[in-house]
Image (cartoon, rainbow, N blue to C red; front, side, top):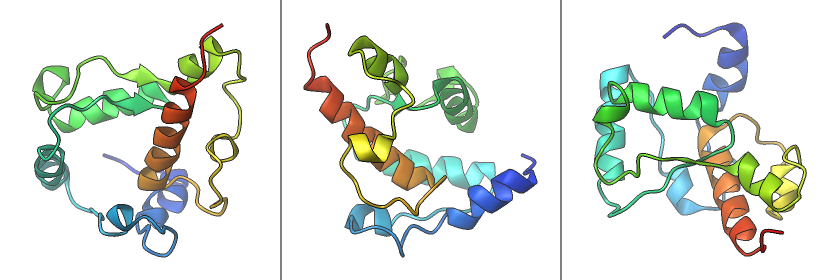
Length: 137
């Protein structure tokens, strides 16, 4: 995979979440490597969960890239549901602007962290659980 300057500055430079998070499970999880190493580590980590529902903020990119790690959609681990959830649709279904600041909506205060996959996933998880509590109009 090729990395442009934006990826290098905003993603790769932020792979270490240790300095940012109070969530111990996020602090301990770091990974760098080639595609095969990432697939192996991710497969091992995901195996601890019986059933997984994937929720994404940028589904058109995230789900495709996630599936590519496993050689395509038919290669994802069996414990992962094959239909991901798009958080923007959940916002829209509840008449909330999908461009809302996710950290503010989730009542999280770590505004200095941007483009860190683990932090972003934590924020989206919090949004997902808050949105589930809101009745669809």
